[in-house]
Image: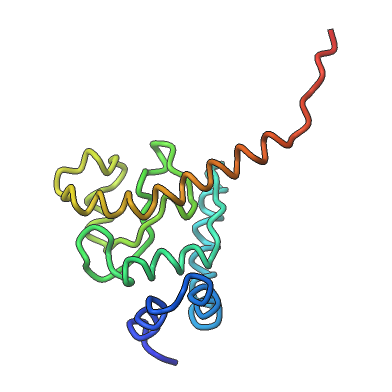
Length: 153
């Protein structure tokens, strides 16, 4: 099996559709366990946990399997907006982080972490914001299709 950097390099040179297809074949077995744990942990807390394995693979590929904050070795998934502040376990709120940055950020809002440079925050927001907006749009569409309860007075 090729090393992770080779897999990532090959994924970045492909179109989005091709990247997803290739990621499904090469990285999904390991990542699906990680994603399953993240989703179960969120649901156990009564929170949203709807991350898909392909979404996490794309996020890792975007950040080159490196920490989104410092560029160090990726260690875990970090809730960009912490769960204690309403962050959800979905593609629009998770970034790879090294152990040090994950611990340093802790439950703080990323905009209040002075050690994270503005350019790094802008890069993370540029990646996550469209994913989060897409999720909110999908939720609005779903809720608009739900039947409205009739007032029985």
